[in-house]
Image 1 (tube, protein in one colour):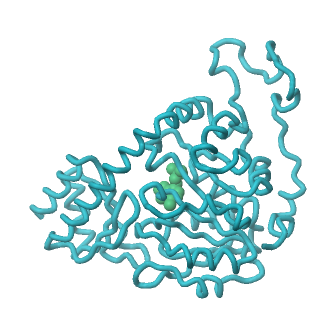
Image 2 (cartoon, protein in one colour):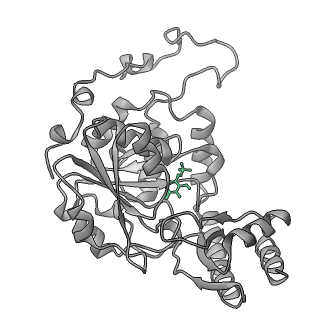
Image 3 (cartoon, helix red, strand yellow):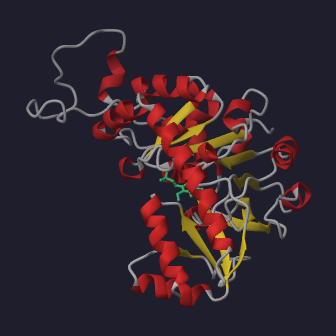
Length: 344
Ligand code: PMP
C-alpha cells in the first residue's frame, strides 16, 4: 500500500477540522453547559449529539469484532461512499475502478465529485477477474470498489479474487458488505489486521431492519478512520438515531430470527420463480433479494405496478437485460407477488 499521505488529497491531509465545543474540556465532568449556544429547555433533544458516537461505537465494536477506533458511522453508508471520494480523489485528476454491474451510488458520487469512474465488467457468472480489474488501474487510481454480496446481482464475489486485488493494489479497496449478514462468508472486516488498505462498509439498513434511521458504517485501520472523522460533518449522526441504534443492538437475537426467516423465504421464492413460465433464469444469491431474468421485464414490471406490487426493474443496467430484482418480503407479500405472476 502507498503511504496514506500519498493517497490522500493534499487539502485533506492539511485540514484542521472544526472543533466542537464539547471536545475542548475532555477529562472534566460538566454540569453547566453554556458553551454551544443550545437552548437550555427541551432536554435531551436540546443538546448536540456526541460527534464521535463513543457509546454506540463501543457496543458496535463488540458486536462486529473490531475495535471502536476502527469504526466511522455515516448517515447511511451512502455518506461514507461520498466521504471516500472527498478524502482520496482529486477532482478532474484521480480515478476509481469498480466492478460492473454494481450499486449505482459509487458512480453517482464519482460524478458529483468530478472523479473518473472506470467500470470493469464481471464475467457471465457475475464473478470478478482480479487481473482485469487491476489492469484498469493506473498511477491515479485511488479507490477500487467491490460489492459482495453484489447489488443488483445478489451473488458473493469470490473472496480469493478480492484478496488478490487487495494484495496487488497499492491504493484503497472498498469492500461494500451491506448484505453480508444474509450470507455465510467470513466478513472482510475481520481481516483488517491482514489488509490495512481495505475499507469495509456495513449498514443498519438491511438485516437490522433500520433503513429509516440512516446508520451506515465503515471499518478501517485507525489512521483512515481518523481522517474520516476530520472530514465528516461534526454531528452527522443525530440523537434519535444514536438512541434507537443502542436499543436495536441490544436485541441481536431478533435480527438472527429475521435473517433466518428471510433466507428461508428466499429459498422458497427462488424455487417458485424457477417454476414460472415467464422466468428464464434466477442468478445465485447471498442477499435479501434475487435477480431474475424474465421474458419481458418491462411488461411484467408494468403489470405488477398496476397490481400495486413494486419490484426493481434492472433491464437497463449493464448485463441485466430483462432482469427484475426482487426483495424478499414477508411470507404474505411474497405470496401476493407469486399469485400475481401466476396470473400473468
Ligand atoms: N451499499 C449497497 C450495496 C446498497 O445496496 C445500499 C442500499 N441499497 C447501500 C450501500 C446504502 O445503504 P444505506 O442505507 O446504509 O445508505
